[in-house]
Length: 96
Image (cartoon, rainbow, N blue to C red; front, side, top):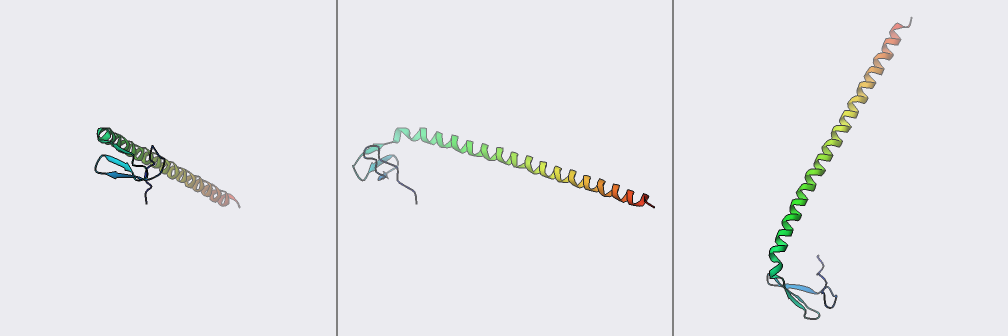
């Protein structure tokens, strides 16, 4: 459930939309026509949508970098274990 916006006159959350561009407060009767703001709001929504996609791409890139770093670290750890195991085996073979 979404909350109604606050009325700028009485401060109550009783604003309702009447039509595409008219908003009215059920408490005090304040009314405002936002038709001249419609184009600006639409442009603003497009900007926010573009920022959302940009954020998703940046986060995906960071996630890929972290995954590559973790996998590389695991590979290096496995290589060290392999070298350590072979060194131990060679020492055991050289003992009489």
